[in-house]
Every structure is written in C-alpha cells, then in structure tokens.
Amino acid sequence: MAAKNAILIIEFAIEKEQNGVELGKAIVDASRARTGVARAAFFPNISLTGSAGYISSDLSDLIGEDGFTWSWGPSLDLPVFNWGRRKASLNVARALELAAVASYEKAIQTAFREVSDALAGRRWYAEQVAG
Image (tube, rainbow, N blue to C red):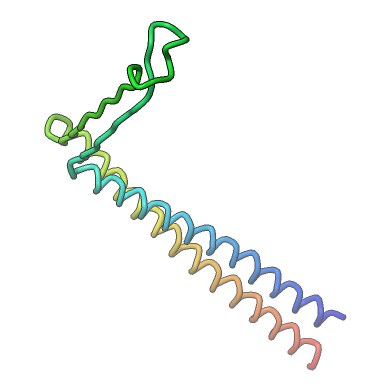
C-alpha cells in the first residue's frame, strides 16, 4: 500500500512538472513569435486596396450601368520616422524572449530535481521497508 502511494507521488510530481514545462515551452514559442513580428516591422509595408459598387442619388436608379463605380489605391508604409520606436520594440521583445527562455530552463531543472527527489524518496522508503 505504501509503495503504491510512493508511485502515485512520483507520477503526480512528473505530471505537475510536465505541465509546467509545456507551459514554459508555449511561452517561449509566443515570445519568439513576438520577436519575429517586431523584426518584421522594419520592412516596408505595401498594400493595394480597391472597392466596387453602385451609387445613385435616386433609389430607383441605383441598379444599372450608370450607377456603377469603382476605386483603388496603393499604400506604402516606410519605417523612416518611427525607426527608434520600432528598434525599442524589438529590444523589448528580445528581452522578453530571453526571460522566457530562462524561465523555461528553470522549469526543466525544477522538473528534473523534483522527479529525482521523488525517486530518491522512494528508494529510501524501500530501504526502510526492506531493512
């Protein structure tokens, strides 16, 4: 009965730490994506938009060849005047990524330590029962 309890404690420790490690990995992935977005902000953004539809001053003339209208327009966004803000955003994203990696490494080390402690406790308990 006590050996089953020890096994359950070990399984609980492994599962608890596995969830912490998985969460840490997800946080690292999210912060790496955020760094990629901050890096991409340095490239120019080019877009082309358009619209088409019908227009009329009288509701009865709305549908027909005379009421058809369309428009289009390009847009260009260059990171010239806000380069400093974008660089600061990139620096913040990199710092958050480093913090997330450090937290992830700590979660992994904690998981190994707790599982090792649980196994050592089980071994000590088995020696006490046997001896």
